[in-house]
Image (tube, rainbow, N blue to C red; front, side, top):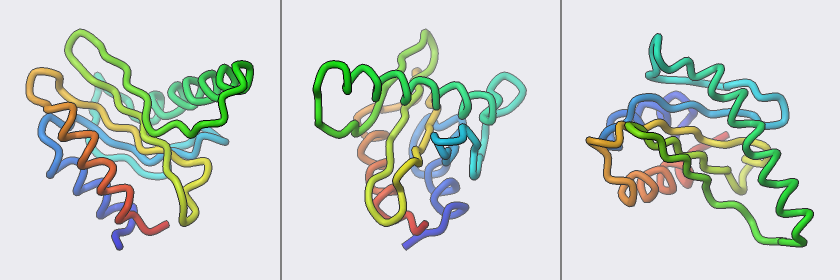
Length: 124
């Protein structure tokens, strides 16, 4: 089991192309922890904005009558991947991991696999 700080560090070091990572409470939009980012990537602003993405997708699923769970949401930009992984189990309700990847240096399939493993080890 890993704590939040350890999980964020592992995301940045074990996921190739990682530019920033955050653990976010999507009920409030607040980042509970961040690592990486920088002047061109404000993870606190991104956390709040991606909360709206999750709320919109959840609302759309309700309107469609879909009862399935969201594993992750991928936003592809010209030079970056933004991966939102909703946490499940052990107190993870209402939380998501937000990972920003450099598209040129990242392996998206491996990043998704690693983030799922990091989520499984995360102790909240």
